[in-house]
Image (cartoon, rainbow, N blue to C red; front, side, top):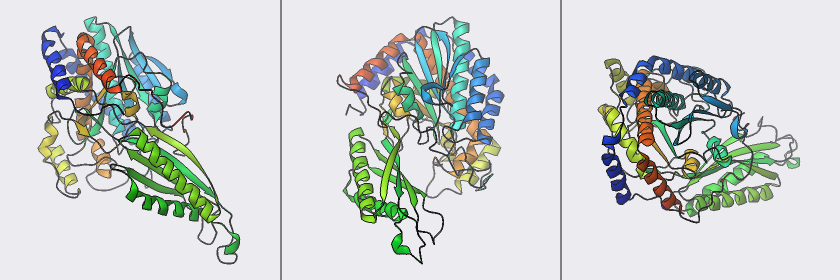
Length: 479
């Protein structure tokens, strides 16, 4: 596995290049002015995505809204790319450098929540933006538009490209884009994510493989003729029991999660069908493959022991993020210029009430206004941005769109994401991405440094092979 560690030498070199290039920078103040003046427009766009959340590969209205906005701005939009109806690219300009920005917009199932500081679903069981992708997609679009206007006004050559990436939450949308070669002509990708702090850290996270295991048995009356039945649910439960024993014999930081998605229809009927949905994580791609193979064997054993049949389908698979300190340094410099999120009195009241619902010790609310020092991080979550980072130099930042201490995938995240706290954090990200893109267009040595680090980390023998294999996009995984 190529190196994912932090390199003080690379960081010092990157910071030195940025420092030497200050005199070469052109005026970027117009970018900040434009984004401030368009705040209301982007707030309304994010509110629309928040109010009408759509699950992975079902983001019909979300992608239509974003595509229409980019077309109105003069971008050339290509819809339905890489075999995904809700995926698209939108490009403006010509020639190089080509800078990409990523935009997500899918929601999470069962996470409906009002924009209030107490738990209150808008619609029980409905989706909600618990990972802030409505802010993600909108801020990246805002940055792309601001860069487009700046390219025109400054006469700077290059192309800005927005990637509309569906189904990040388990659907691995970006993996299909990578596999289709949609990043081959890109010099660098800059991205961001919602969070509870302002950071631009180089770092890595965990690789994943996910899939559904479907057992088939024989139905029968559970009381009158149980001997004639073969329970598919028994197969699922036997598999889960074996996987839970398997946990003791895996390496750190292996993570194994599952949820039973089909357990039968009635307790007096021996279930003919049952299904369980698994996610396997580890920092090393080869270890993920190894653990996945062992989990498949438990399913095979469970089917034999319960006299049922089993088939499985790989739904998704993502690489760990490949760090790029040179690009992260550019983001950190511009994030420091932009600054953190400034709360109003109303924001402070909301934030205090949210923090009162969070368990354990929480950070100071004032930390939302602070840009954290740059450091190397090893995250425990996963994202399909990892595959992008192994195909092109990439870096990402976070903005404090949630109250400090708020975890992702929580009702508190959904609530804050529908308030001015979320929208202010969104604009911090938009400004940081746009300013960073301007630096990359006007300071070619930054792109050279990022490419050199990228190639060094990959090593001469690296060959990309998607963890989800050659399957087509799992367009029905949320149905």
